[in-house]
Image (cartoon, rainbow, N blue to C red; front, side, top):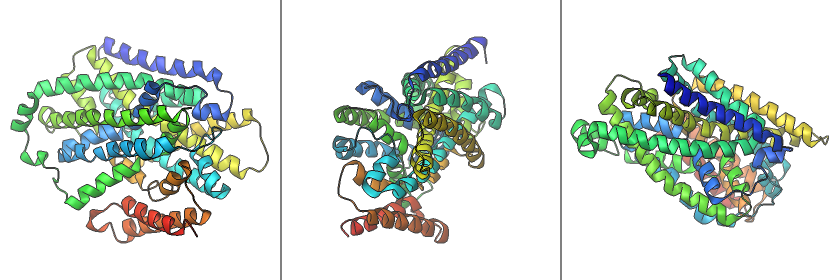
Length: 454
């Protein structure tokens, strides 16, 4: 790496870290740490929503899927796009939540009781830890490619940045960092797309250089397996703890609705860019790389000095933008919805704030361990989705929109979702290649609706 490239990356990391430390002075309570106290504009809400989902799984992981299997890796991602439009039409305009609420568990508690909040907090923590794990894999491969250090050292080095500013400034730091990261990654990805496509000769060059199976949406999969993966992506990110926090930081539902819809629109060109970059990598890099290091390897191969440093910064922005969101949500879920819910003695706001910061660091350490066991970022996402859609998603959709519910529907639905998912994935080994998360969600929904009026 040339000096100018290194300087650009170093300056970017310093700016993020200093920003988190500066805004930490305004964080006085656990609510400030969770949802901030600022009335954000539509653009900032849009930018932080985009940054929270544009992570290692949907960038380096998706590029690796396209590099291996072709355009099917692009098409399944539009399941997320569809989920954004679904939320902006059917959920965001109907949010019916007290402004004092700042976590997913607190929403659940109002509809289903304290024990339901604790269960939700545990599931949310596990889910967010998995999301962080996906980002850490991408952080490790990025630092490994550019700095020549091991994946483990890269994870430790890169994630220390996220831990510093997210622990110091909470949601204020995360939102501010998200806006910076959104602008950097959007510009950087556009540059990489342009240089990659120009290198291969654009669409004509790709057609002439790639095997025909790369343009087959069902390459190495059946239609049922493809639809199952599409539905897994559709359900997996819907109303996750990180996403719910972004719905709660806005004081006006109209802003949230617009920001969510715009995020869905933005995801279309983003996924197309990532997909075409993955296809270009097949032509440019051939077999001289591993799927997990496609984006860093492309940047090293085709980008000129100066722009290379900016692209490296954008790569770091891509993976840290989701990692900070997941980390903040996990620490809030475990602290507010589990530990403080179990603790009977009332504690001060200062104690709560210090506790959530300690938990923030501990979850970060646990996520590093998680990442080392699951090296594929996209597959980490798919595995992690198994925690969310079959359990909390259905009761949360009803609770957040103020629809009639019952405690029985919550417990019966979650039990049905977990049992059916385990049987489908572990015992039956996912027959017809249908993902267990989809089956678990459908069983949860059916039992929840049956018990809703009991």
